[in-house]
Amino acid sequence: MRLTTKGRYAVTAMLDLALHAGKGPISLADISERQGISLSYLEQLFAKLRRSELVRSVRGPGGGYQLSRDQVNINVAEVIDAVNESVDATGCHGSGDCQSGQTCLTHHLWCDLSNQIHAFLSGISLLDLVQRKDVQQVAKRQDRRYVEQLIMSTGEKTSADNKAAV
Amino acid sequence: MRLTTKGRYAVTAMLDLALHAGKGPISLADISERQGISLSYLEQLFAKLRRSELVRSVRGPGGGYQLSRDQVNINVAEVIDAVNESVDATGCHGSGDCQSGQTCLTHHLWCDLSNQIHAFLSGISLLDLVQRKDVQQVAKRQDRRYVEQLIMSTGEKTSADNKAAV
DNA sequence: ATTTAACCTACTAAATTAGTCGACTACTCA
DNA sequence: TGAGTAGTCGACTAATTTAGTAGGTTAAAT
View 1 (cartoon, helix red, strand yellow):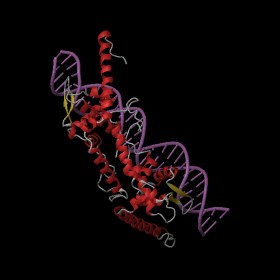
View 2: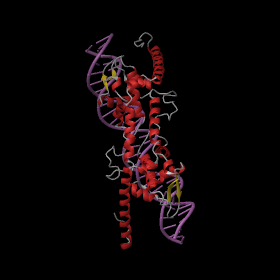
View 3: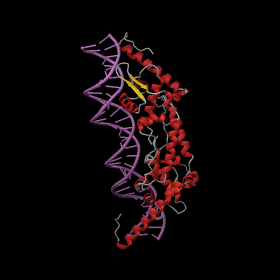
View 4: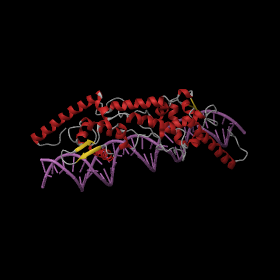
């Protein structure tokens, strides 16, 4: 079982998408900015998320990504699975041939744990997360920071060319 | 959070110790043989288990390791913590400074998951495992194999004094 | 004294993570 | 039509961790 920044980044990015849903496609550059994840790394993760049909992409200017399903129908376990190839805690991926073809002493323990974790994570949808108070607070802080940054940079570049107000 | 062979090996080895308790100290060579874990690697793991005071060692011939506490008072989470430095699922180790000093969007989610996993694993003692049917069956198979191997090797040595076979 | 087995340190190969870089393609808008 | 935006793709890299090796030292039993 591995639960590293990879899976965490994926869930965070998907949650960012969920939080900004209904405003058209969200670019990876925006997510990168808001969540502090490198753009190129996000590209890799979203390639997998797209293959798992969790997101849809729109190319060209104004393009980006959108959730391909309703927020209530995407759970955290799916997202992690998509980038991490499973939250399995066994070494034999559940097959039971852990010790030279036979089950090891603790095989069933890890199976139980895997089920436990999977049950927990698959019981949490993106909608659940979006509705959490702590998530909303952090999102608010991030959006504020994001807009400030935008004004700063556009102010420096061109004073008139101001396309995004939010 | 990492749950790899490292933590699994540690739990397996501790369970082996629990299963063969009351027969004096168990050598790492025996555990290595029965559980298919490299001796040198076991040494590293047991150095940590000893530092965490989960096992006591006896040096010299007939020496080995013993559980330092009653089986019912050692749980799986402790064992993993001892070798793995925690089953924490957050990237910030619970401190909440995940995104440049502030909590990231999904911080609380990973805290919840960590608690969930910890609660599950700390609720399982070595005694619980020893009493499980599936564990007893695997242990029986391993002991049988171990005795067979022992007879084989001693029989070959005394007859022709050749130490390398199998 | 010899053997056994814990103890300790340092090294290594392989895998994985977390990224970078550069080129290319699809699309929009002026 | 062409400039610019943003996804797509593949290859490459640095750092970290895992899993395991190797070699020696120390304590105890016979």
